[in-house]
Amino acid sequence: MSPFIIKDNPLDINHDISWDEVRMVLMSLVLHKAPGGDRLEVGWYKVLFNDYDVYCPESPMAKALLNLLQTIWRSGKIPKIWNITEIVTIPKKGDPQ
Image 1 (cartoon, helix red, strand yellow):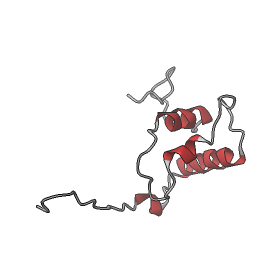
Image 2 (cartoon, one colour; image 1 turned 90 degrees about the horizontal axis):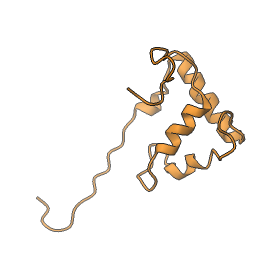
Image 3 (cartoon, helix red, strand yellow; image 1 turned 90 degrees about the vertical axis):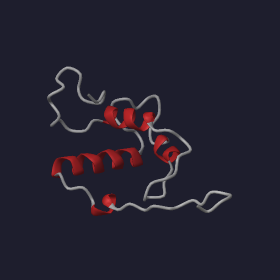
Image 4 (cartoon, rainbow, N blue to C red; image 1 turned 60 degrees about the horizontal axis):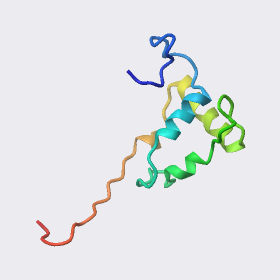
């Protein structure tokens, strides 16, 4: 079971997305990985929070991200662009087999 589901009532998955949940996910992301389709690296997302905004986002960009995620969650409509995958092959040195 995901540690991000409310511990008091794990069956309550219909609650709104909280800033605390967003922060936990962002903090769990590993730095220096390939960026996603938005071309933004994990480090960009990690600067959206600080040690003081545990329950409520402080920066305008963090507030916008939380609002976006809550709107998507409430509507159930995931942007089509999020379902597009780009695969980039990286050739290895040596024998091309």
